[in-house]
Every structure is written in structure tokens, then in C-alpha cells.
Length: 113
Length: 115
Image 1 (cartoon, chains in turn orange, purple):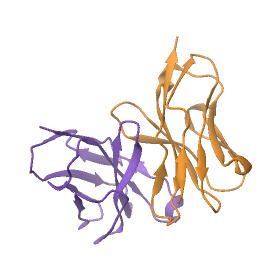
Image 2 (cartoon, rainbow over the protein chains, first blue to last red):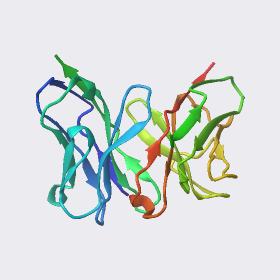
Image 3 (tube, helix red, strand yellow):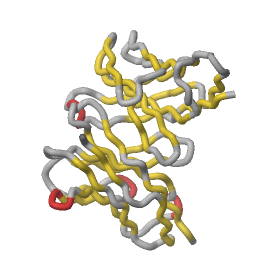
Image 4 (spheres, rainbow over the protein chains, first blue to last red):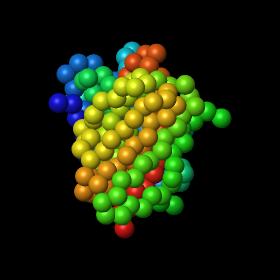
């Protein structure tokens, strides 16, 4: 069965420092992958998505993610974190039935000044 | 502005009571979804609908029911059979032009609490 693992439950990064959030997926075929962000008590907003082609995808708010098939990973990166980036981040993969998303358990990002 | 609305923002349920969460979208999307979010658990799919008058169970459908009588609306009923309903409920919708590759757009959520 498909699954998504986000190994880090909580990460704290200093403002201005770089960020990498990890995501590993389990899927037999070519995966369709997404990163969403959620502010406290709010819905989810799409940051970026990968379907095929260039393995480095650019998203909103200065985020990017790199698809690595050999490592079954889709890690999210940002070169310089801002305090407003503090939120919960979810990685997701399309389920094999092709009908809905399977989400990881999320990584909470805190930004220190 | 196009978007997804969920109401109410907070909902309180008494023992043995059924409650209904509203989800409305004006994005002209065919597909709609309900997810449940618990702390540290991510999002889990309750029900989804790809077209009016049709819906399918997700991973945790027990104790929930839905209807899809209109394209714009996908209400979720939490029945008394759901023994642990306290959670944050998120509704989403997507176009079907490119199938599941279409982005799912999420509403602001409803927090359900048990009295």
C-alpha cells in the first residue's frame, strides 16, 4: 500500500537559515507528489507539486522540492526562512486508486529569531 | 471570489447526537473530499465524490455519512455511531480535467468538539 513518511515531527530553524523538510514515499509506479502548508486552525494551501519531467520543482513563497526516485524522496527546501513560514507542512502522494491523496503526518516548523 | 466555505467554524456535539458539517464550493469543481485531521496524525480520507449523486468511502468512513445532491455542496454528517468525533474536519475540491493530478483546494475547516 502507498504511504508517506515525514521523519521529523518538529523542526526549529533560525530566521534567515536554510530549511529542508524530509518526505519519503512508498509507491510502485511514478508517483504524483504534493507539498501543502497549514497555518494553525486553517485549511491547507498547496506549495508545489510534481508529476513528471524536471525533478526540481519550484513552488510559491520561495519553496522548492526535489524528486529523487532512487531514494523515494521528495524533500522540501527553502534557502532562507522567514518567521511567517512557521506552520505545519504536509507531504502527500496520490493513492494507487487515483482518487484521493495520502498524507504524511506532517512536520511542524518553528522559526526562532 | 471563488473558494470553499465550511460552516460552522466550531461545532459542539452531545452524546447520541448527529451533527452535519457544511461544505460549499463555487469553483465549479466536480470532485469533493472530506478529511479528518487529528494532532500528529495527518489527514485521513473519510469520503469522496467525483460526481453528483455518487460518492465512495475513504479509509475511515465508519460513523460518517455524506450526500452529493448538488455539484456545489458536499455535507458530512457525523452520526452517533462515531465514538470519537473530536477532530478538525477539512473539505476539499478539485477539477477532474486531469484527474487526480488536479490540485485539491481546501476549505478553512470545522472543529468538532464533544460536550
